[in-house]
Every structure is written in structure tokens, then in C-alpha cells.
Image (cartoon, rainbow, N blue to C red):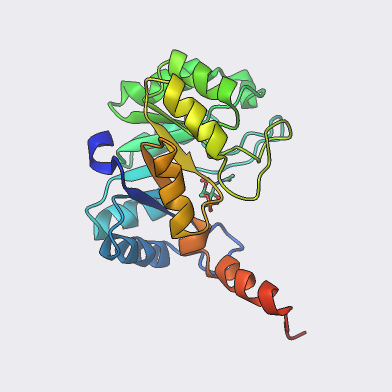
Amino acid sequence: MLGEIKGGLVVSCQALPGEPLHSSMIMGRMALAAEAGGAVGIRAQGTEDILEIMRVTDLPVIGIIKRQYADSDIYITPTENEIRELLRTGCAMIALDATLRKRPNGERLEDLAALVKSGNVLAMADCSTYEEAVNAEKIGFDCVSTTLCGYTPYSENLPGPNLALIRRLARELSVPVIAEGKIQTPQELKAVLDAGAYCAVVGGAITRPQEITARFTREIGSKKRT
Ligand SMILES: CC(=O)N[C@H](C=O)[C@@H](O)[C@H](O)[C@H](O)COP(=O)(O)O
């Protein structure tokens, strides 16, 4: 599967409860549109969306489940329960928070990576810093991503993708480095690949129309009706 996504664009099709497009049917259609536009893979949240996307497209799916636990800030595939749910979908890769923060139920990252791999599924490490990505490679993840850079209190929070981090990781790690997070334009997509990313994941700029609309309205001063 990693070979299939090399050098390409993976589109993240996610709408959580409370978002305007929250619907498996709509996420399936988003994925179809992404496929028609040349995407090489889809990242999706929740078993219903993943199954619908796998039903309507031929693209490999990176599956996650976002869930909050009271005893931890980690919410992207936080525990072995979410991994077991994802393994049942047959998705090609499972991504999980690979930060070094305390996990729910005191679970250990290395055990979770091993659980993913025990299902013959690739494990993707969502990281926020260089050190986290190095650790993820060491404990056996198949690829690392910059998904959480700017989303942990201690990581560098830039308005766009962190090109310096991508460049450093691509130079120093052996596993593929996937650029994910804050890629807003085709030019930024090109820039992350030029910085050495193996492939890139773009979400909101393609699949969250409320964010796209807000980027336009901000430019002219919003005339939101009350
Ligand atoms: C931090 C976090 O929770 N990121 C989530 C991870 O799955 C998604 O909400 C993002 O949309 C995804 O990472 C793609 O990023 P962007 O939408 O910026 O292109």
C-alpha cells in the first residue's frame, strides 16, 4: 500500500458530529470526488465512514477513530479498543497519536503499534515533534507523519506546514515521512514533497467547505447573517 501512495495526494475526508457534512454517505461522495481528482488514498475517521468509503472507491484507506478519554489529551486512535474496531474494517493502514503524552488507561505506544501490525495492517505514527517521530520509527511504526505538529502545547505552531521538520525527518529517518496538517494550497503541497515528504495528506482545504468558505469571507470581512 505504501508504494501506491508514494509521491501522491491522500485526501482526508472527515466530518465529526457537529460538523455540517457529518454523514457517511457524504464522506463516501467526498472520497469519490477525491478519487476523480487524482487522489491516491483517503484518510477517514470512524468505522461507518471507512466502510462506506471502501465500498464506493478503490483507494487505500488510512483509518482513525477520534475519541476523548477523561484521563488523557490523546484523541486520535487513543487505545487498543479503537485499534480493534479499525482492524475489523479491513482498512490498509491505521494511524494513531504517537506523541509521548500519557495515554488513556496507562496503555503503551509500543504495544499499540504491535497490535496494529499483528493484524497485518500498516501503522502510521501521528507526531508533533522530531523526537516523537524518531521514537515511533524505533518502536516499529511503518511511517511517521507531522499530523500533530502545532496541536500539542509543546510543538512549533506555524500557520502552514512545518517544512523544516519535514526536511529534517526525511533526511534522518529510514521510514517514509508523510506531511499532514495545515496544507492549504497546491503550492504548499508541492513544497512539502520538495522538502522530502513521501506523500502528503490534505484535509480541510479540500473537504471542509465551512473552512474554505471562511477563508474567502475573512478576506472581505464577514457579512454573516445573525
Ligand atoms: C490535529 C487533528 O486532529 N488532525 C486531524 C487528523 O486526522 C484532522 O482533523 C485533520 O483534518 C487532518 O490531519 C488533515 O489536516 P488539515 O485538515 O489541516 O489538512
